[in-house]
Amino acid sequence: MSFEALGLHATIVKAVTEAGYTVPTPVQAQAVPAAIGGRDLLVSSQTGSGKTAAFMLPALHKLVSAEVAPAPARTPAQEAQSARSRGERVRFTAAKPKMLVLTPTRELALQVTTATEKYGSYMRRIRAVSILGGMPYPKQMQLLSKNPEILVATPGRLIDHMESGKIDFSELQILVLDEADRMLDMGFIDDIEKIVEATPATRQTMLFSATLDGVVGNMARRITRDPLVIQIASASNRHENISQRVHFVDDLSHKNRLLDHLLRDESMDQAVVFTATKRDADTIADRLNIAGFAAAALHGDMHQGARNRTLDSLRRGQVRVLVATDVAARGIDVPTITHVVNYDLPKFPEDYVHRIGRTGRAGRNGLAISLVNHAENMNIKRIERFTKQLIPATVVEGFEPKRSAPPARTGARPGGWKPGDGRSAAKPGQRSFSKPGAPREGGYNREGGHNSAPRGPSSGAPRREGSSGGYRGSNPRSADGARRSFGDN
Ligand code: AMP
Image 1 (tube, rainbow, N blue to C red):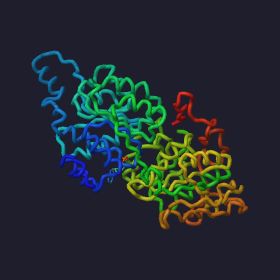
Image 2 (image 1 turned 120 degrees about the horizontal axis):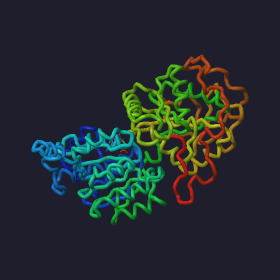
Image 3 (image 1 turned 90 degrees about the vertical axis):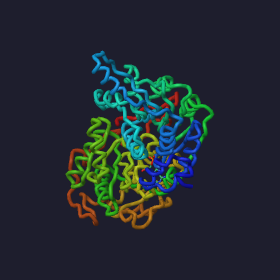
Image 4 (image 1 turned 90 degrees about the horizontal axis):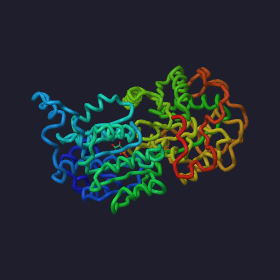
């Protein structure tokens, strides 16, 4: 199967070929022809499956072909300019996009916009802009005044512009909800309903979500007509190329020393370390910088500009260790991320899956390590039930926990990490949790020669209650099916 065989316009095939894509991914192979044919789609797939191209390629195809009327020769901004030159009073003319992509986060929206520019690089008439919270309004007004064909937006900011008459959806032809489950989790349901209501009933709707069950499934059925349902269970969905491990730690000092050691693994190219709180993300990034790592924090308290700069530095390889809250659990697509470390476990098993998906991108192998204390064993079990995969407990020589591992954890099967892919730091599947002996004091490790004890405000301090992101209550969903909280990210 080739991209030509999917029926795509030659300019799009040229652009994806230049991007290095030779074969459509399974979700693209199923979604593209159906979408070109005008079908609504309900797609269950994750980031990493190639889902952005699955909706953007057919949309671009439709925008360049005769089915969608070409953009007017003059943009509203040009019309306004000539009216002004005739001495007429000019009011802002609302943008009339042909396509709208709704995403849960600014990061994902920017990524979709970048991908659109890549796939549409040979189309002169198509412009895609991001409308995001955190971006200055004048800048957005300027973008909207160019009457872009494609808007990629987060729901809240889009509603602001709709309510102030800056956007008119009467000509909208294609609506995409990307990571719809995540948008609902974030409480955007009312905004989404309002936005959908403002679009013509004749639109084509494509909804992408990790799951099509429950609340998201109900909404999906309400807003689509006779949709083609595509369920993708690819290797990357099951994260078969990502080796997973648990390392048990006795206390925070043990955890910090082990983290330092893991980040000095020679096979580590770049890593994302997930924390439960924004404060910990900052503190740990500071501490790692002092210890000589090129580390940076990323969390929801940072301005969008700072977040973008940090992500750019990560993409350019200037940041080797990103210390982040769950704001980074989805959307970041940097193929050189070899390691994900759960410094704190996520609140919800779904987020574990999204977090570890930051590594193992573009067909590479990845390593996901969770640093947990024994009290968190139940949370690991919940993740295992959710992923239907066992996460082996392993011990790093010189960093053995004082307490032996819970019995169910010993002898768990090792993951699929290949020799030379970063396994050297630990002994997967090792059964020696009962090995007594205190962990080495200070931050020394054999390979790295890191001799200084961890510094910084968090090291050695007793961990405050609840900050490890543990599960609260047995059912993380509230009665209406929405998740209670995404906590402090
Ligand atoms: P996504 O699931 O849209 O986040 O895409 C994940 C990654 O796969 C991105 O880096 C894309 O550039 C890449 N990708 C998408 N489609 C293909 C393809 N057909 N061949 C190779 N890489 C692809």
